Length: 169
Length: 102
Image 1: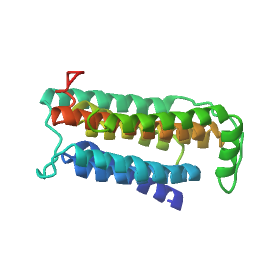
Image 2 (image 1 turned 30 degrees about the vertical axis):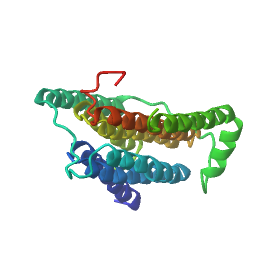
Image 3 (image 1 turned 30 degrees about the horizontal axis):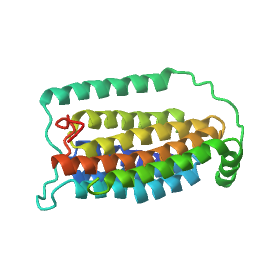
């Protein structure tokens, strides 16, 4: 077993166990903190896949932005005085149905991943040190319109969010 | 056994089905949002895995970057809506919210 495999299985274990913590935990804060470890594990998997810039972006945006927003949401939508902050119970039938559906989706996906012949193309943009140079070049030449549209979308979304969340509108 | 494309795809499949389970079973709107983030992350792992094993192709990483941008916008707007729902109903249980004008 070489180092790559050990690191891969370590990150895979972190991602899967903490994702199960997110989904199966009753308490909202425990779920939010498990989500932190899921995001870090996913960032590690990005780094293993040679996407170093995206690993940094994952940590900065997901952990630094989205997770903080979610924890703010947890704090603002539960009464802090009652310490439970648990998610409500759902019926047994919903649990059973959701388990059947998600396990069958998982089986289907794993079967598909194992059997499909992906017919992968050869290397197009080889990079050795960092993916950042190639990524920046492609982003500002071929995908420059998408880049600008995404920037305007973010601006509109944040103005809209501030407008919606304002008190007494 | 050599770590290949299939290993990464299976991790993303597990994340996807866990997120699906969370969306279907949880009542709290913020839990639904967290499960949605799991699903978005699984899609991102797929994009980057294909980008790596499809010959270091950059298109997959670009798509993953835009997914992250969309996730940030989505969470901001969704949490604003959830806060408004909390002001009107004093809870955020998604299966008891059935009026558009609170």
